Each structure stands twice: as C-alpha cells, then as structure tokens.
Image 1 (cartoon, rainbow, N blue to C red):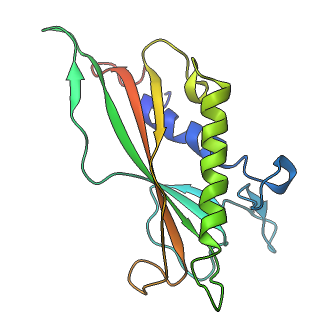
Image 2: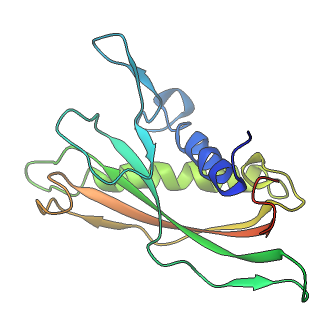
Length: 176
C-alpha cells in the first residue's frame, strides 16, 4: 500500500534536508552514512524526539507541531480541504566550549538554504509532489531559534526551525 499523502510530504522534506552535504556546497553533512559496523545510518529522522550519546552529530529531527492548525473545507458534502501544516525541524550539533550555540547557527542556516532552494526550484511542484491535489501549494520558513544545552531537551546545543506548508488534500482519500 502507498504511503498517506502527509507521510509522503515528510519523506520529501527529509530528502531535501539530506541534500545538505559538503559536495553540494554546504558546511554540514546530513546525508546517510555507513557506521563502523558497516550499517547504514541516518542523520535526518522523522518523528524522533529522544536521542542518545551514540547518535551522530550533526543530526536533524522532523516533528509535527504539537497543535494542529485549522483546515478550510470545500463546499458542503466535499472532503476537499486546504490548510496550513506546521512542521518543526530540530537540529543538534556538538557544542563549542566557549560559545556553545555558535555551531547550531550554521547548521540551521544550511537547512534553511536547502529548503528555500527546493522551494525556488520547484515553485509549481513543491517537494516534487505535483501541482494538483493532493499537493503542497505553499511552503514558508519561520525564524530559527538556537538554544544551548539544557539537560532536559538536549545535552548539546540545538536549533528549531518552523516550516509551514499549505496542503490541498482530499480528507476522504489520504492515500491519493
């Protein structure tokens, strides 16, 4: 069975963020890599909010905002819907001993550039998901927030970036 539309959107966003590599002109490498045991490991995750000391740095987690935004429905009897969907991108980096949050700024800047570039390159086909419903009709970046380690959320510096996407979808057919 195919993935639901919203999961396809998250996977497409993951693929965009994984283009952040030195070979593509970025300061960071967020591509998948092979660990010492020969296993393929990711640096970009979806829906993951708990990490440990064995996780690679830098790394990114894509999370849905905790409160959904209101959807606008089509005419009565229609399952067509359009509305904003807020995603939170969280990035983690090793701390700088003197200025702990400094490394988080270039990481989240790289992610912003990759998303903005994908938006600009495919204005009518955002994230490669087409231009007719179901599709992403708009994608907006919020202002990044960089925070130091707090031993509650993270033991290293981290950054948040809000990404708001406008979706056109058929709620009766989430697999369309």
